[in-house]
Amino acid sequence: MFNMKKKVFWAVSIAFLVFNSTVLAKSISLDELQNSQTNFKPAVNVTAKEVNSGHWAYKSLENITRKYGLLVGDANEKFDGSKPLTRNEAAVILVNLIGKVEQEKINIDDSEKMQIDILKNELSEEITALTGRVAVLENSVSKLQGSVSNIEKNNSKTLKTGYGEDFKIGGTFQFKYNGNFQKGADNYSPNFSVPYSELKITGKMAPHVNYVAQMLPYRTWNNAYHSTSTTPTVGSILADAYISTDILPHHVVYFGQSRIPIGVEGQIGVPSLDTIDRAQISRNFSNYRDSGVKVAGKWSLFDYTIGAFSGSGENYKDYNNSMGVGGWLTAKPLYKVPQYGKLEIGSGYYRQGVGNSTNTALSSRYEAQTYSTAIGYKYKKHSLKSEFAYRKGYSSIDRTARGLFTQYMYDINKKYQLLARVDTFDPNVSDINGRVSAGNARNTEYTIGANYLPAGNNIKLQVNTVYVNNLKNTDSVRLMALTQYMF
Image (cartoon, rainbow, N blue to C red; front, side):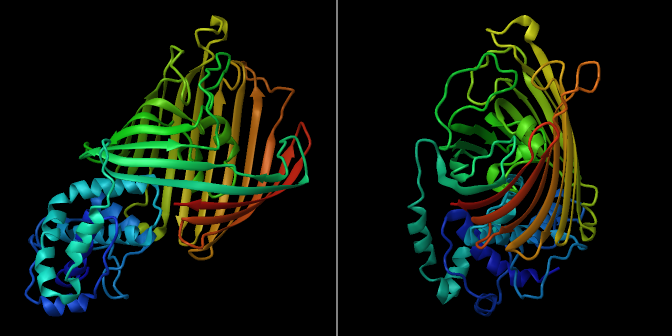
């Protein structure tokens, strides 16, 4: 593993800064700390309470630190995935990781944020003990003189409102160009556009209780409910709007409006997409939000999300009498042998009532059922993922639609990625008796592209060339370029 006495000095400094300020003070070397405090002893016995390699906390730390890299001392020291950790060592790794994320402004995804929050709660005793040693270090190391006063000064700038503390504002802005070499039935306009913009407000209302309010300014305000719609309709400027709590171990519970738990790309936001456009099954089956309750669980072998929603879609009153219910389960069979790569196998089901508002005829009310299964594998610089999904009751009770996409991506380095994807969708496969429709309108998109991330995930440049083959209408070829900035 690594020398605990040596590494704890760096961890103590980072821990105090991370948990008490949004701005990190200038760090000093491990040697300087060690030379000035040779008799320093950790506040918690480092030999007690080991965390073995099969423990969920161990795997979460290992996966995230391997993905983003972790500076724990000398350059040749690495995370040893074969030996157990003490809880103190786990706390040291965690605070170093958080320090790196904060200092370098790394944009980690929501599932990893959830893992880190759960780990902070699990290791709170050890973290508190470590951060309590900052006063000792400050008195012993000249380069830390004045750091606490600087931290207090920075901390006083933290915005505290009637809605709680840790109030933060972030956002995303995209600028896109689409050029058509051949215009087809998909009707993509050759022009410049702002396809997506986002403003997100987050904060903490109380310990273990957070809130999120996300607005999408590229939309327009629209409070009308479309009573004749047969699928939930995307609403107005308000997107995610929920309160969450991690008071249950391994779990986060969401109350409010959030994404429904079905599909691979359907459950992630636009800024996290590998390609400029979503896969067709995501566009048609799962890319929307609803109001309700959702529970997300995170374990070593599997993750899952289940939820119950109003079934009316984003920002609409609950006019129908049938909830939307379903969930998604992901198994991680290689979690004990990460040297063989990362394998994830997922499957989900979602049922929603459609066409059953108070203004819709009883005969047109029915349930739409979406089924999906997916697989993803990442080994070193290579990653492959695929998803198949179909819906019974697509647009009408007697229609079944289905789709499949497969994508390969190669990471040249941390800044450059190449990808290729084949994406097929048929909106009119069969009628209620399973007979193939004569109006088959299968649409297949062939995409090749490149991504450039010059500053982590804060800036992303994407170029996609897409050839669209449509069995019923005109084919098309387009070249798209997109710039994304996150703050």
